[in-house]
Image (tube, rainbow, N blue to C red):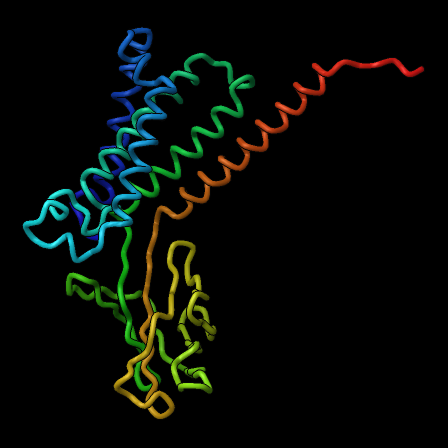
Length: 275
C-alpha cells in the first residue's frame, strides 16, 4: 500500500505522538481530564464502539458503499481502512499509551508486570495492525513453466520487482468425480533463492520473514495440463515481527496474571490441621 504515511513517515510521526503523550502524562498526569482519559471506563467505551463499528462494517454489503452513498462517505467500502475505524484505533492507542506511560512512571515494575505485559502486547498488536498497514504490499504474480517471473502487479496498476525469480515446475488440479468442479489445486514452484517448494490453497510459502506466497488460482483460459499458468499472491508485511511480539507479550501477560492469581488464592485459603 503506497501512502504518504508509509515508512519512515509513520515511524517518525508515531514517535512524535509518543513523546507528546509522555509530556502530557509527566506534566498533567494528575489532572482530572488526563486521569479520566486513562480510566477503565474510557477503555470500555472505546472497545465497545470499536466492536459495534466492526460488526456494522462486516454486515454492510459492498454494493451499498457505492460512490455518493452514505456508506461510502463513512468509509464502509473497506471498513478496516475507513477514517472512522482508524480514528477509533488511534484513540485506543492513545489511551493505552497513557496507561503504559503512567505505570512506567510509577516504577513498580514487579507489581505491575502482568498489567504491563498485557497492555504493551495489545499496544504492539494494534500498532502493527494499523500503522503497519501503510507499509503492507500485496500483488499478483503470473507464474508459468515457460519463463521466469520477476515482477508482480499491484491493484493500482503499478508493477514492482519481486527481487527473485519464480517459475512453475508442476501444477496439479484435483476435480470432483461428480461434476468435474475444481476441489483443490497445487503448484510446485522453483524460486531461484530458495529452491523448489510446493504451495496450495490455504498452504502458503514463507519465502522471507516478512513475505509470503499464496496460490490463489490459475488461468482457466489455458489447458492446465499443457500450459499451466498459476496466479500467486505476494504479501509483504514488514511489521509482522511486531505483531508476533505483541502476541507473545499478551500470552506472557495472561500466564503471569493466572500464576499470580492462583498464588494469591492459595495463600488466602485456610490451612486445616491434620487430625
